[in-house]
Structure formats: C-alpha cells, structure tokens
Image (tube, rainbow, N blue to C red; front, side):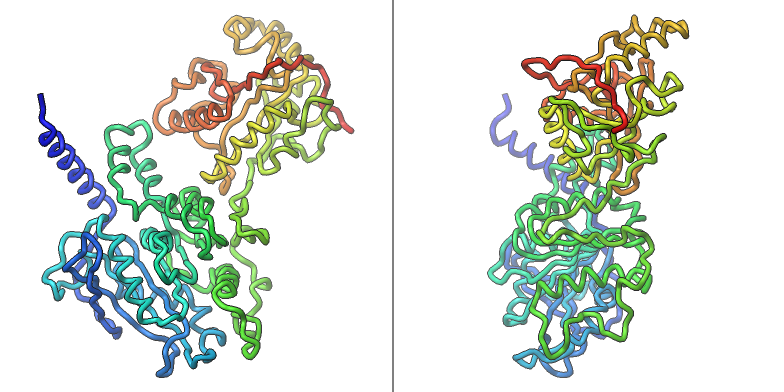
Length: 547
C-alpha cells in the first residue's frame, strides 16, 4: 500500500509536469539585447517565488520637462514580448493621453506629463542580471513580479495616479494587480486584446480531450493567470477593454468573457484589428472615446485646460466613420458591460418578429419582451422548413411561452451572454393546427415513418408553451455555432451524442445551459427542450395572427 509520502511525491511530480506544459505552451522568452534610450531598473523581488531575485524593467518619461509626472503607466507585455518594445507601443496606443493638454499641463503640484515603467517577466530580457543569469520563465512567477513592479512604481509615484496597461497575456498581470488590492490601488486599467487563458486551453485542446490534456493543464494554471476570477474580484477600478473584431488568437467571444465578468466600471472598445496588429490612425477614433471616458474616471477635468481630452485641433470622434458600426460599445450610465457584442443575428427567412403578432393569450408571454437580447428565426412562418411552406397558425412570426418557461430561458440567455453567445429560437409555442398540418404532410408525402420514429409528434408539447427549439449563435458574428446538423434534421445524426469534435462540444454546451435552468433535453433532437411544469399547462390552438 502506498505511503502518504509516496502519494505526495507523485502528486508533486504530476503538478510539476503539468506546470512545465503550461509554461511551454504560453511563455516564449527571449534574451537578446535590445537597444533603448530608457533607464533600466532592477526591482528586488519580495514575494515568493521571487525572493532574492530581481525583476527587470525599463522606465521612460514623456512631456515632463524636468517635473515629476502627473500620470504613471505600468505596462505588461505579451507572452513573447519585451519591455523594451513595449515602451514604444504604449505611447502609440495611448497617444491621446500622451499628446493631451490635460496630461501635459501642470497640475496643482506642478506635475506634468507621463512616466512609463515597462516590465520584463522573470526569465525574459537580457542576461546581465544582478542576481545572475535569469532563471526559467514560469507562469508561477508572473503574479509576484507584477505586484513587486507595482509596489516599486507606487512608491515612486508618491500619490500620482497609476494606470496599469496590459496587452495580450499582460492583461492577466494587470488584472492580478488590481484584484490583489494593494495599499494604493491602480487608478485605471487598459486591457488590450486580453485572453481568458483557461478558455484558450479548452478551445485549443477541445472539450472532448478534457481529461487527457485540457483539464489537467487548466488546473495547473496559477491564480494570477485566471482573468475571469480576478475580474470578478475588482469592484472599484475603472477599466477599458480593447478587443479586436478580427482577432483569431483571442477570439472576440473569449475576450468578451473577461469583460462581462468584470465587476468595476468599464467600457469596451471594438477595433477592426487582429491580435498582432498595431493600433494606427484608423483605429484611434474608436479608441479615443474609451480613453476620454477613462481619463474622466482618473481625475476631474481641470477648468483651465478645457473639457476635452482630445485636442480641439483633432476631429471629433463622432465625425469620423469607424471601420464598423459596432467599433465601440457605449454602455449605459451604470458600470455594466452592455450587450455590445450583439445581438447580431442571422438573417431569417422572413423578418423575424419585425411584424409582431397580436398579443399572446393569457398564460403566455412574448419572448421578445421577456428576452429582448435573444435572436429569432421563426421558420414555420416561412417556406424555410421541412414542409416547404408556411404552417397554419403562423400568419406572422411569433414566439410565445409560459411565464415560467420564459423566465428560465432568460436565465439561459444570461449565462450564454457571459460567454459572448446568444440563443437563436426557431420555435416556441406551436398552435395545434400546425402540428396537425405536419402530420398530414407526412401522410401526403408517404413519410409516415417520421411519425413512427417520433420525429413528428401527433400531439406536441409545443402547444403547451413549455417547449422550445433553439440553437446557439456567436453574438459578435451572428453565426450559429457548428452543431453537426441543421434544425429539424430527421436522422439519427440529430441525437445529442451522435456528433463528434466541435459539434459535440457545442451540443453539450447548449444541453448543460438548458438543464441548469430546468429544461429537459430530447436525446433524439439536440435542439429540443421542455420545461416540466406542475400543474401542466393545457394545450392551445391560438394562432400567431396579425394584430
């Protein structure tokens, strides 16, 4: 029988192996010298596992003219970046601040301009380290290095506001700093195309490989890299999330997951940009709005330099056409991430719910009112269904359910929105006459086997208003997730577990979301779910009629 010590040794060896996998997967350090005119700083490590080591950083000032800066920026780079290069990119991304009269004008203490401290993670940078050659780059040291760098800059700032900027994996360090509630909290965060790293792992390996790779590697990730968990812990630090609509590494849905879990004041700026692209003048109008808002959170606008962060010699942001209509999300007054990723819904065969039906009868509610952010494609009101013609009872597109079922579906939608997703409803309450027409169609076309195999129900639970047919769409692109088959696909391929790979993962994602809020799945049809109610509502034959 194994001893306790042997078990602990095995567990430690496994954890070390998994940690090594995650380090190699996410960290790509370089050590070549990079010429820079900035001041190199070695920050003593005070936290485990950096004690008796140092953190390499580079410091540079802009527009100070010999005075102390009125604003400091702590910059964290990506997983293959270097602090030396980040010193050049930060003024480019935040150029509105670096060129603003509000930043350049002296404050009440005579401070002016901006000071930037860019940090190299342990294991990155040049080898002429005071403590010797840098050790291996590990995710476990990232959090300690970020906090030590912040403490160093806070001591130097002497009360001046500090904005923590992170790009790509650097956003995890920025969120860790804000979530760790240091004695002097950051004034604001700028999070540029940051990932939910556990989500990236699951997306790369796939849910079907959960126990072999994705799950163990995810569990080995240190707390400092868990952006969603850290975002939930931050309540008072304002943040600007910069996300790329064409980002194929940190996909919009992945980045939006972190933004939607952020508890503090926040805005989201959508840029037509890929993950590795530089922000240029085309993206600046959209970014300026978010930076204007963020500066107003940092300090009140001084009367002697006007109310504009953007100099008046520049065009107003509203006057510049952004690359896409959704280039920046404007949130409501409350500090809540808006449903800015959509819903951009698929174009339905008929104008889904654009010509709404008459009000629902007593005991049913309109899903448009219950879930205004949902997508609809009511195909039985068009010829885009298996019968090839609109069904009786669907004079106009509509989607009704019982109040209890609608409330449960609204909770499903809220869960999916946190993932950057949305429900797409194909059918909800169905008049009895529509089901009767389906049965007649099966007889007329000599396809009675559809009735015998229960693909078409002679008496459908849809008529009670407790059943819904739906799928999931990406709220940014409006594209339905891959499910392996279409809706109303009458073969065994429609069984929930008949798919493989990504399609199976998406089917199970929908199934879990629905079951979590009381819906019972139909194993033979991945799109079909019923909420059991007691007492059971009666079936109806009220049509979706024109008002």
